[in-house]
Length: 194
Image (cartoon, rainbow, N blue to C red; front, side, top):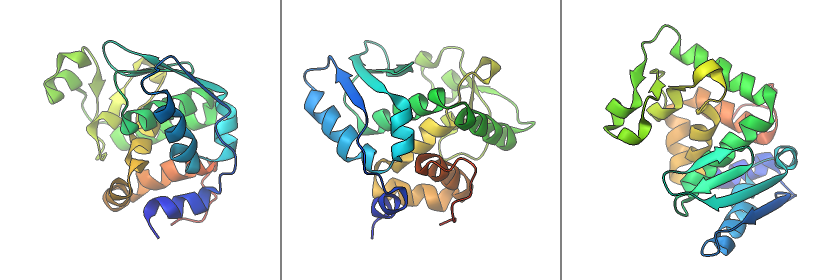
């Protein structure tokens, strides 16, 4: 059994995402198939129902999430996982609080650094992060007033392939378990651990 198969068994999803709309004609079929039959298999029905309509639009600069609109620079499954993670966190305050708490715990008393300098990429502008031993340093990004985190989005993108799932599990079991609890719909962590 692969990592994805195990997660599908734990999640036991039966429903599809409620609605998906897109003006990205060149990717429309890919997006619908991917959301319904790939990502949709590993996210609980409860979480999917809470999202409502998700709209995909074209972006000129970089992929983003705003409310339930996802702007894509190109069709990339890892990016879609990432941006769906933002949609989930934005729609559920308990999940958001859990992500902020996890970020605070992992980065406590650590100095901030500029993501622009770390990645040597001006697209990151004034974005800052703190180290926390994450599988991807971007998970430590800090946003003013903790309005949003990258914890769920970066964690969820690790679930896009079997290889990434295994690497994530082996690298950071605590972070892996947090993301699994969220996508299963058990944000209180009462699920039996893997």
